[in-house]
Length: 308
Image 1 (cartoon, one colour):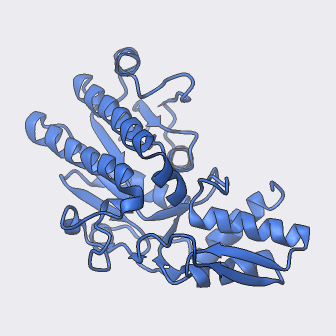
Image 2: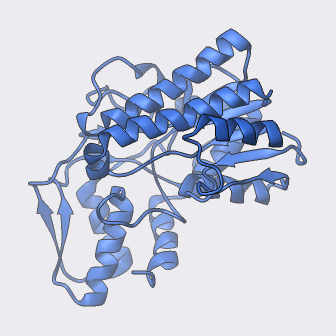
């Protein structure tokens, strides 16, 4: 990419898209085309077609998606598969029709089979059944990967796919009904400390293992891959280390300064037992994460502690 190339970031207000925008600006890129979902509804093909014909972006980061935690994914199953398929179908197809130089499609680690060997290697895709609670979302993301590969194969499009692990950072979603585990925990502990509660309830058994990547690290990896990776298939983006949900709760409790106890609600679902990315591929290309989990959570806590 040249600094003057026109770059479209789909989903620039979300946690991932906004992080990519910040990283690009930090590296000296300046020619952005940005639209909110109210200005450009990516679910509608005619609207997306008009946008691409008018703007003709050189590069596209496809970070727009309908996202949520376990409960949201399991409750709004039709919405999650339909809206994500429509968004990515429209953006990928119009990128082909309008001669985009390169597109990056961002997926999620939930594309991997529920009981895949750990750590998760890129070649484990489609080797087993998915986690049922977020299967519709995962199916949509798998379709996006295969669509990028198909357009590469048939039309020679330089479309690449990246699969981030669990993310957190600025502009995350802290709604307790549909957020992911780390932001939900931060909000619970901040609220409990402020209100003087004697306990915080954590969903599930506390035993599942999860990996967490700061959004700024993800953005740095995305720009690096946009500049250095041009292959079919997918690339995992993660830190290569995981932590149990209970130990994550202990870490957040310490950072927030909550004095009460942690209670595990085993009536709530755990989801996949473990999700750790194998990051040897991206490390081999020349990138690795820099922000530790403690440092990242401390940053986030300072940004959000007065919001709840």
